[in-house]
Image (tube, rainbow, N blue to C red; front, top):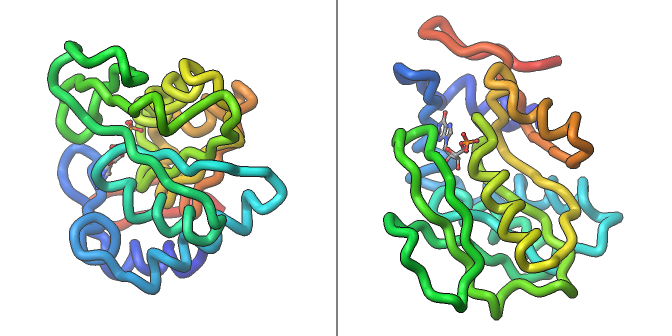
Length: 190
Ligand code: 5GP
């Protein structure tokens, strides 16, 4: 998605530790029209699948998941993050190591919101080491639901997880794939 690459080039900031800050349009202030454009693009990519739910993890995935859900006319569900593993039996859970915070947390989705009747599309803002997507996939598996695939706005391709997941046969659609990132700027996969 050329418009996303352009926005990353003009508004993104490369922080130490391979973190890209996109607070001006995606992570803190949200560019409403642009978020909806991303949602429509995700819906276009997955139009042939019979998606029944969009799944993400709080908080930075929510805006994109809602936009994709609106475009696909299906509900969006977000997994809640918890520090402790001591959760109720009424939830599906998975452990996720956070790339940006350097700690492990539990994610949980109430059982009533996912079932084996669902075909799920996972949506997130970033794909870095793939832990968030793997945790969400584990929750889908626990629920016995089907996985249509994943859609992320920005894949940091140089971290390798996207290609690993693709090699496992999982459909991963990334609207911008960053191949390299430094103080000097950002380069995209052709
Ligand atoms: P992963 O689990 O793939 O290692 O990391 C994905 C999660 O970490 C995303 O949900 C996102 O919130 C966060 N993340 C990873 N890399 C970045 C980054 O460079 N910038 C920002 N803003 N968030 C990131």
